[in-house]
Length: 313
Image: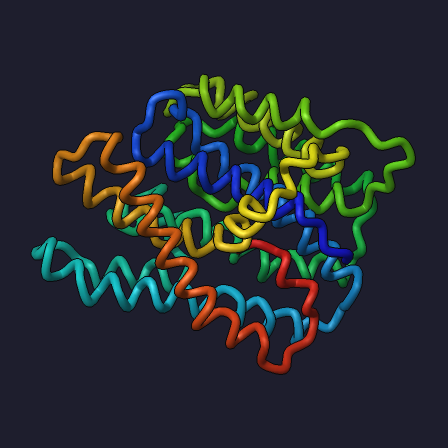
């Protein structure tokens, strides 16, 4: 698909919201909805990639080259440093859970891992990357079928009894990914502005609370629909600002690195005024280094489906 810089701009907004939320910054109580924006974007971009190239082997190789090296680098750094500064915790076990993409159900059922808790969303997306290509290429589901699947996935989360489990499990967070798949099959004849979707996501970021039952029901649904508007609508020019686009390109790495740093500072008693600038600047620097010296190498190696570069984590 043709590169759309505003989608990287959306990624940048999503990761900034998540970092601010984890730093406990005022005005970002609902910053966790940035993950929902990531989910819808992933479904949209990956489905477009599959429409252009249906070679499963090439797809999986490309995804592995995109996702595994930065994750492995972060985990190597984690198991090298954290056993020293936070001894007595099962760091190696937690790293194994994160690397094998089991964090979503580990968080839901056992409230683990701790300093790698954020990898639950990576696990959700990895399960999607493994399963969706098989479904898409075998059945080529129609817009109607995907709409029904989206309704079912949303209702499944609504009917789940507890926020903690419903928040992080693949089966209860599948709706946004399905909606993104649905968007990839929609042809827009009359463009509409993206700003209402951005406005709703911003309002959710500022007003949603953690653990509120209505968010599990209607809250995530509202954000997913807003994300669809932001993706398909005509974007404001500022969303393609070079610095914002660059941050969007680094968003996977920023997401990987920020949480262990943020939680370490939180556990040490630091306030959000310290945590936010330190964790954001450190994770951006580490993500930039990873991107320049690791990810670019794997991306430039001979590999098909180069358009998959645009698909986030």
